[in-house]
Image (cartoon, rainbow, N blue to C red; front, side, top):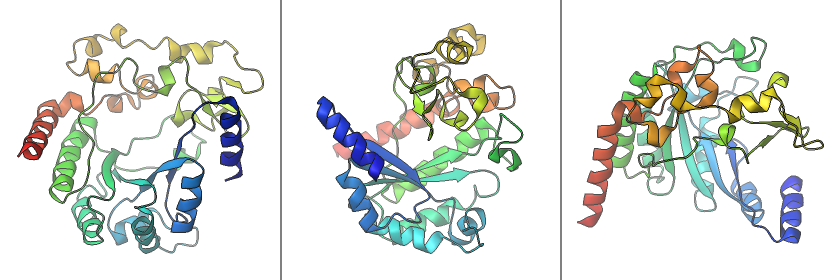
Length: 282
C-alpha cells in the first residue's frame, strides 16, 4: 500500500495519470483490502483458480498443506463489486477435464456477469535449472491441443453468462518485451524486459539508477523480428500475433507455445464473436 501511495503522490505532482492492477492468489483479497487497493488506483485483480475445490487445493495449498479454495471463493464473491476481477484457470492434462465443474461452482455463487474468466496454458519452464520453476514438472498440453481446450472452455463460460475475451486484434508489437518504451521493475530496482525473466540475474537489462544502459541483453529483445521467421511470415495469424511470445520463441524448449491460439482456432474464434454480436443485436 505504501508503494502505491508514493507512486500516486509522484504522478499527481507530475500531472500524469496512474492506474494499476494486481495478479494474486486471492487468499488475502478481502473486501477491506480491495477497498484500500481501489482507493489507491488499483482497479483490476486477476485471481488464479485452478479447478474445483479438491483440484485447486491439491495444486495450490497453503505452506502447511491446508486448502485455499473456500476462502478464495468467498473473497471473490465479496470483492467482485469493488474492483474488476478476472478468474484465470491454468490448464494442463492434469486438470483440463475439471474446469466445467469450476465454472458451475462460480456460476452458482452468483459470479456470472460479475467477473470475467479465462483459461491459460501451463508451459514447461525454461531458463535456469535452479530457478524456483525448474522443479515444476507437469504434463503440459501442446499449443494446438490447448487451443482446442481453450475454445470449449470459453464456449461453456459464455453459456453460463461469464464475460470472456474477444478474438485478438491487430498489434504492432505483441508485448512489453519487444516494445522499446516499456520495462519491468524488480523489487530492488533492477530492470527486465519480460515478466517470465523476473528474478533471473542473467536477464537484468539495467537498473533504475543507471537507466538507460545499452547492451546485448536489451538488444536481443528490441531486435526480435517475426518477419525473419519463414513460419511466421506465412501464418495468417501474424497480424494479431506478430511473432507471439519472444521469450518462448528464443528457446527451443518452449517454442511450441509461442503462438497465439488464434493460429489454430481462428475460424471458431471469429464465429463465436459473430454469434455473440448477432445475439446482442436481437
